[in-house]
Amino acid sequence: MRAISLKSVKVMICLLCLTGCLLFKGCASSHSVTHVSLRKAAENRLERVNMLLARGAYLEAYEAIQYDLFSSDPEDRGLALRLVQNTPDFYWHVLMAVDTSVSRITTLRDASSAKALVRSLAEAPSIDQHQVAQLSARLDARVAARNLDSSIPFLLSDDLKQFPSLDTSEGMRVIFARSLAVLTTPSPRGKSERALLAATLRFVELRGAGSDEYRDLARALPRIPLSYIDLKGKLAQLYPDYASQAMKDIMLTILIETVPPKRLLEEDVTTLLKSRSPLLTFVREPSADVMRITIAEL
Image (cartoon, rainbow, N blue to C red; front, side, top):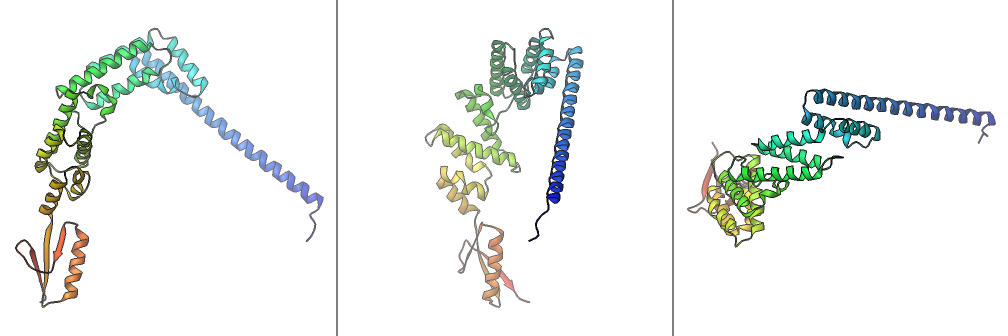
């Protein structure tokens, strides 16, 4: 093997050093550009906050400055905190605005948005936590009342955990009855109703087989459109007798015949039909409850 000359080694070292410098410079340049972009974005947000405050739109201003108040960047966080501290009664105005929105909630979306704001305020720096707790209590009371008078028709498939005030015997009784009413109302079964059926079955399972809810759902089952998948899932575990009979009712027993008789053709057709639906069973002998399909060769 030919020995590498000292000159070649020096050239290689120089090239490696130059490449490293260029890479470092490129990374540093990229980092600098990113930092400048983020700083500009933060300045634009603060400028927008000042415009909103000038209009008295305190809630919108808080929503606009939230990102910076909780930022991991100490410079962004510091600028946002100083702006809040230099605005007289900033949080008082925000709390009043949220309180007004709480009094006007009419939908689940309204309630969820208000809840998210209250949770955010509970973590905001330099805010009166006692006032936040009072606001949270008013929101929960409002949601509970809206559920009972059906102004907000909560269902078992909704995210109920975000509102602890709903978890009372009366509140859940209303939600369960409302959910059964939706399930037993004739309509095309969509994704949302399938989620509601699954949530209702989970709820009944938690209540237990001896509960009123278990018996109420049992009485409602004949009026709920159920698919093959429904009958083979959780429902079969909770109501095995009903699921078994319902499966028999929707199954179709078929006898395939060919004229003239061709066994291979009969088997091919049977295999094809089986692949199209799990609700079909096939027999070789005729009976009263069997559908006969005759394939005649012309």
